[in-house]
Length: 249
Ligand code: B12
Ligand code: SF4
Ligand code: SF4
Image (cartoon, rainbow, N blue to C red):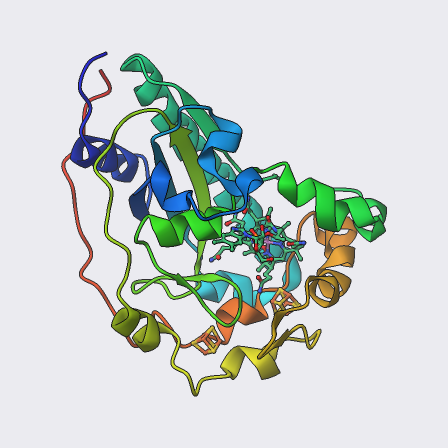
């Protein structure tokens, strides 16, 4: 195996278009339900690389069709970057399981089935939102989305589980978490057209009631009010980093 550093891998991910990239050590998931640990996807997993690509708020604000198509575009984009990271790991002799996201239509009728709410999400193995928290990219906000200092909730995520022993990033502090999603903010609650968000967390069924028909009409889930209403990412900004491109070995 040829050595591969976290810094090199991150540079490579950014050169491919990742706006965010973080790394979690697999043992950060030791307290997770067994079926939600990296080892459930790859026995011997040592690291999880999480990438994020930014959602353009003005695009998803226009109308539901453009919003759905934008989310599809980003899913294709992050899936491709995650695959490219998998190739680099493979070139270095490591194993890689890519956790992408579905692109395009799923029969809206199948979304009424209990399988959709229970079995289907479990097939992804890990929750990319939780993995992003463990990789130091952000926190899970009251809207149930990953909030990051740079984009707030406006990113989509993919992950790569690998046996490469990469250097991990620190998690955000409690202070940073409070800054991102302050105790007194409830902006997303009233913005949600399905009344799915509240102090008890998210009611997935209510959210799905709103976005289920979008699959048939627009080809993908289009509602994004929980992203648009959130002030996080507007009030805390990190400097934009530029990186040298790593040559593919
Ligand atoms: C299925 C799914 C949905 C379903 C949810 C059904 C359901 N039962 O969860 C529906 C259709 C409702 C949905 C809606 C949306 N989704 Co969606 N969805 C997913 C998907 C594919 C899986 C989520 C999942 O596993 N859900 C099952 C629930 C039960 O699991 P969980 O939330 O991960 O975690 C639970 C348990 O597993 C367990 N658990 C997991 N880890 C841990 C760890 C510990 C320590 C413990 C104790 C427990 C625990 O406890 C959790 C709570 O019960 C993810 C992508 C992915 N692979 O993760 C995207 C994803 C979460 N969705 C995303 C988005 C953007 C949306 C929408 C805005 C729609 C849209 N326009 O795209 C809305 C937003 C709703 C909201 N406010 O959160 C993004 C979120 C990006 C971000 N910034 O956070 C993701 C990550 C996809 C992506 N490509 O980026 N989604
Ligand atoms: S996607 Fe729409 S319905 Fe679902 S939680 Fe967000 S705002 Fe509410
Ligand atoms: S709108 Fe406010 S309460 Fe909701 S996730 Fe964003 S910061 Fe948190």
